[in-house]
Length: 152
Image 1 (cartoon, rainbow, N blue to C red):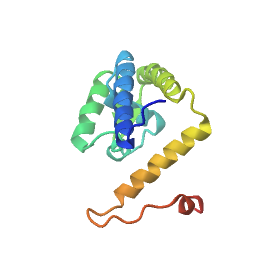
Image 2: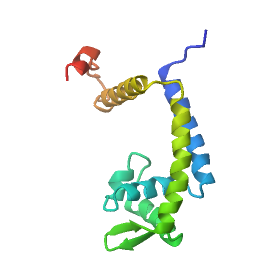
Image 3: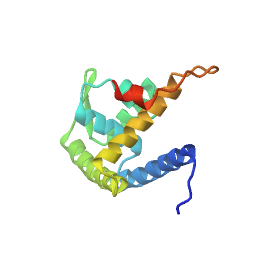
């Protein structure tokens, strides 16, 4: 029987593997993970507020985003048009190379996991995150129950 580990270990280990594996794949495609996240965001929405859009991926500031967009401009992958960015043909080609690498990793990550199982895992993790994000430092509120979640 496989050794059972606490959820904290499993979540941390999965995060380490995701960071390392995606990092290597993106690097092979010729860009950094932050460049990928920025370029991918711009391909999806060139009018995006990058600081807000990228905040889930890293601790973003106007300065940190400026460093990444500056590097993408230097490579000729994006151009700035006023307060917006546009992805160039070269940028779309670079994005597609990285997108293929990312798709292969995402497929590998979910191998052996059904769509329903994947949905349950991500929903459960989202609930756990919300439970802890909303908890005060002392006097934790009761966690939402499965019945309460399913009645929404």
